[in-house]
Image 1 (cartoon, rainbow, N blue to C red):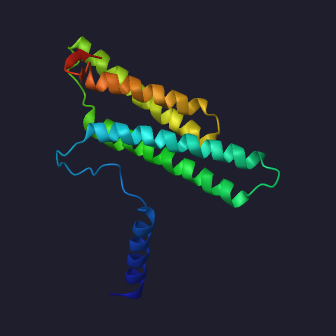
Image 2 (image 1 turned 90 degrees about the horizontal axis):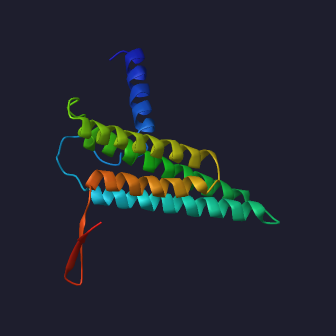
Length: 167
């Protein structure tokens, strides 16, 4: 192999290696292995972590003697979890789970459009969590997760002490 091709190959391999720093929320190989409830739990956990990061950033920033290293670490943590949240929404729900529907089925179209709107709002508020330390975005994410989960699963039956009811 000539030196120019070898150098170009090395650069390409290096760029690929450097650009793949984190795994996706779920592989995109059609394995048919899905755990929707685990993804909803992960979304909620990411919001809790973002919220804790914001509180720590505010607390450390208000301290008389600021520890900038710790502030930076909490900012990075907040951003990482906002990115992971967005990956689940994008690569798991939008790319794999929410499917286009028959346009003549008005009820299905309304549900589909509602779910797309909720997922889009989640992405926007995750981005706003990255851009600010406003806890309102965490609260909004929690309500969006709840609304999307209700839309996604529909009414669920729960059993308490032998008595079944629908939520």
